[in-house]
Image 1 (cartoon, rainbow, N blue to C red):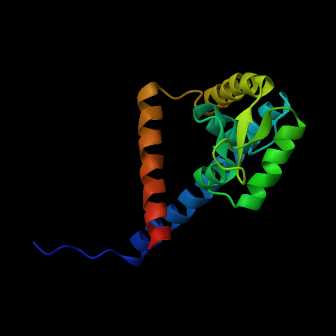
Image 2: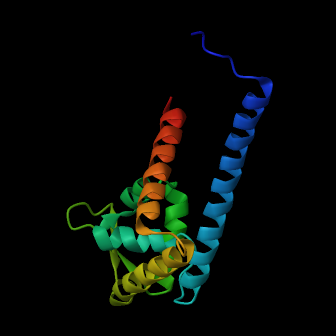
Length: 158
């Protein structure tokens, strides 16, 4: 049996669905970041600083360049972020013990406390975001979003 070709109406529906998907992904990302940013602000952190705090929690004493590479930002942007975090008392820069030309970034005691606050804010934000969803749906959604991200990264890298 011959395969029926898609009508213009079917193609338009698929195109509309793709446009709607990207619009929804963008809106969801924006809303989730806004909610998380507001919760982080309550503990004195600004957007983007949470990622640095968590990166240092996983690997304290990293060079600034390593943090920038891990988070996918340029070194000058990371320099500003680290300077602001240092001024707030969350991190400190120290000269490398092996290479005097390089400095490393460490969480202070206040920074280590901020890790707990960041995790709590993330957990609270995720709870708001997933209200009304069952665990199976959340797991499926995470899996689908990961696949979409992998597809987009592959397209960017080609």
